[in-house]
Length: 255
Length: 161
Ligand code: HEM
Ligand code: FES
Image (cartoon, rainbow over all chains, first blue to last red; front, side, top):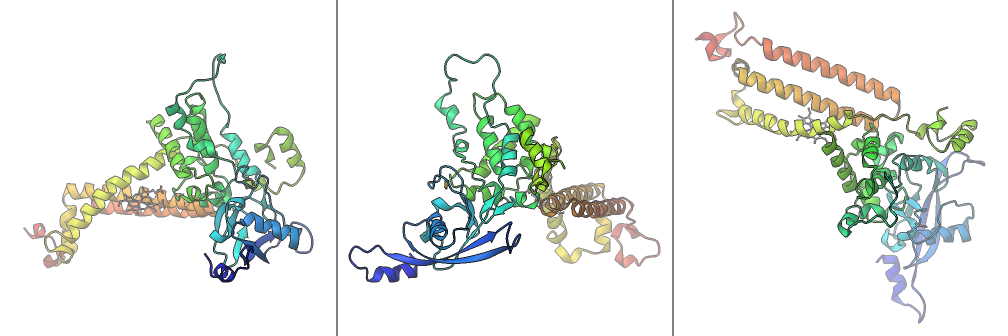
């Protein structure tokens, strides 16, 4: 652990929980007011505990220091995907990142995710991201009569796309992709992951349509295999691998 | 305003009445087709062939016999009088140029943010491609290994024979 913590650990009073001081630097942006349209770094000093996450630090800032700090969160437990942000230059969920794991000896940098328009402080406009998601038709497509019972699938068939079912649409992957940063035209890893989830589902019959949609100038072929998305995914999805599997399906379809 | 390209029609209409700050972020239009697929496959296929061509080229020019010291006008003249090396070098020229140009095209697409910048850079790229390929092809096929009146010392052995 950090030097700061060890000092605090040195002489703990009985029953006292060791704490440490940490500096949080937040990239802020306000569309209104005096500094409208200018983004700037804002610094906060808080006392934190070993179990505190970046989200707890942001809460502490908002509740005790500056109520105008704006960010999204809902579940606070890595399920809803609301609080993806750039922490020390890496896309993480603030609710799954412990302060002690991101080098609290130095100021911790917190920025909005890149490539999407900032609305205020850490809140970005997710609409372009969801637009791509909608385009790949993220729902079951079938033909013929609906069965009277459930659609049967073997354990192996389910396993085939298990990894990509885990996506929580937090946009950490898409907004970590340098190709997406440039002009936001690329479909992005998240859309491809969610297409993968249906393309490789034995019950789904829309694979050809989805492959057609992603066989676009802005589709899978823009992927440059940088692995930023895999590194960023808070659910541990092998995003880059999923993208390559979709590429392979397109190639076997074309030749 | 092209706001109707995303969202439900109702949302798109609402956005249309405002000057939507998000409009530059919308995908302009679908650009489906196999072009990028073939381009991706070509990069891999030409890469494999280039490994053979480029390393074969380096080995023959730099390592066989006297090695790098052997390279002079006569050496080049000698090689290009053989159809085998003409075809080898032609293939290497065309594949490397198409591969390299396509690679740079990708890089331009990745880095250029404005359509104008992108267009200008690609224009320059294709111009450079055309000049090098035309000139290179011309040289490979019209190279004169035994120019009249040159010092025989500098020419390939078959010129004087
Ligand atoms: C020696 C054998 C070669 C192999 C195996 C090879 C392989 C590849 C592959 C697979 C890519 C695609 C990378 C991607 O899609 O991310 C690529 C990209 C590229 N290649 Fe080659 N290549 C070779 C030689 C060359 C030569 C001779 C040139 C220059 C004339 C060249 C210039 C480029 C450029 C500019 C790119 C784009 C850079 C990038 O994609 O990051 N390559 N190469
Ligand atoms: S607040 Fe729900 S994922 Fe973090």
